[in-house]
Image (cartoon, rainbow, N blue to C red; front, side, top):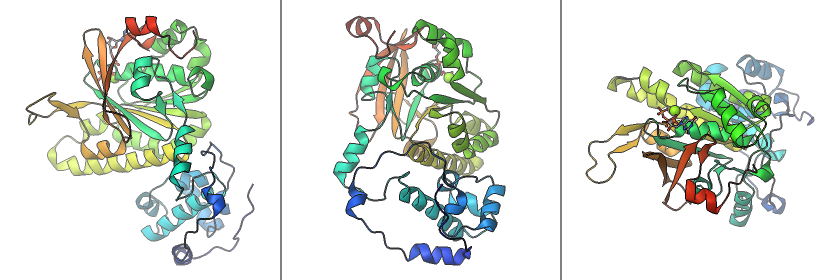
Length: 370
Ligand code: GTP
Ligand code: MG
């Protein structure tokens, strides 16, 4: 346990002043490669300079139990919950993030590009179950990123999610995360029997695979927002490195139907997605979301469908993959990525879940040992 540095509780304004007067310094040691953050929750909220017993109690009452919880909260949300100004809420959040940096649980604000490259190489990747799809993703789904699969009904979004739960449970050397996963099911389409079938077909122990998946059936948009709010705790509890949200938008889309409520819907989606981005980075987890398509009649050439959710969702996803059904097979196309080439590939869905098509399978076996 880190020793508490400041037992005297500072006033909110003092915290703001103290933090804003700090000039960021970059020392040589800061430039060294730091390990990516791991799931550690040893720090106490009162280890944060400026947070004494009273503020700590207020935070705990608001459901902010750990330094990690505080670091991933938004100032808007926190200021309402602890009944403080937005500035003091922001100061507490910044102080929490600073403590994580000081404890090497979070990366420094500035690193040189070579360190950033090293860090990218150390990201964990999990196989999708198909070599072709993994190739499109340059090695599988990544930690510290949100990967969005969107497409029409039956295009294979939920099948990818089911398969990923199975592959993620496998050891890193077999292409998995060696971790648990969290499956947030907003459409009631999670099928444990299907997970069982995929595990058995891949020669894995279905019981241990099923035990590694924590499923939450979500009933309305407020319920989803509540689950996301407490997601940090669940990630720790279930030792999850993969969080699936299938689908991210269906509930908000159904409940905020009219034009008049669109701004409200987008704002609520936005704050939820921002929390998810912070969770992915701070907990070093991989987030997979599925999304629906909407028709865009203004398209004259090409496919007249686009991802639902507008810019809010478009900006939140690190990678966007568009899925299309062509007969028994599926086409996956990389639509948006900071560094992937805009390519596409084909895969199929079999009893093994997501799988390579015949010719791919015979030329190269999947990464997962069978
Ligand atoms: P929506 O959620 O409705 O938008 O669709 P989705 O994109 O999630 O579709 P999903 O992933 O559920 O894909 C459904 C398709 O997967 C079915 O039409 C089947 O082609 C295939 N599929 C589902 N289960 C099985 C199975 O057990 N075996 C095989 N071989 N294929 C399956
Ligand atoms: Mg589905």
